[in-house]
Image (cartoon, rainbow, N blue to C red; front, side):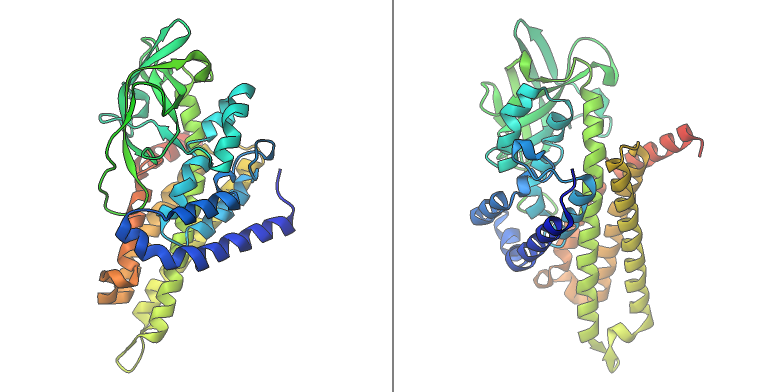
Length: 381
């Protein structure tokens, strides 16, 4: 159920002020420390950011997809690592439970997820399995009242601090996606261990690490859905996540455009502000046009999802276009800032590195192209 307009406007205003007054001044510190300050995490919990997409009956805000995307745009106006801190609780780490959990599973976990008491992660990718996500090798063997899970998951966002993992594992001998099942795996189960966080190109402060499971006894009641439904659940989760990421990309692009305009109106070359030079104007125009197009596609798709329509193709198109778009905008921003764009003090080179990941996670651009083409052909055009 959507919030009433006045309440939602107040939420947007609160998030916008939080981003501008609290988060943006800390961007350099987060980059240097590769960590989000503890007081910021506490404020995020108090604001309800961990429960944006979780129903009010479980303590969340219960936002519609359209509302969640508008909040995500605001959160995109700062270092993406801030959003990533609670992003798995809002998206891929919780939505399998929201979509396929039993009443008992939801009652046990969702209130703690919504409050930020626990952090969730989505464990699908493996050392040899990325885009071909139906080929997971992690095994789950039924043994009485438990499944014994063994395998390694790689590049798992928030693994270093997660308390609960949604793990995709192979049950039985059925090949491909049909043999994949989903499990809720608490971090404190014997046999679960977490690797050292990886060193990354960008998004400092947002950690990814391996999750290793060595004969972990997971209770049968922790399975999400029926055996063999894991891949279907994962794809539904990613459809929603792709819209959220699209919105974040729009937010980052809008922040970069604003930064470019501010710089270009002050920086002078050849006796006038560089904003008066037509080739600079061309880069600003291209960036603004593409950002507007991405925003329109994303919001239209979110509204269609809220209306119960099939948006598999549209979600893929939105994520594909928005993630590629923000990469182009970031590249132009470096060019407009010139030498300053290459220097860390201005933050442009940081965002240039940060946005590169958007074209990879929650489905690479190439996977989105395959989905878009497949769905278009299926629909007849």
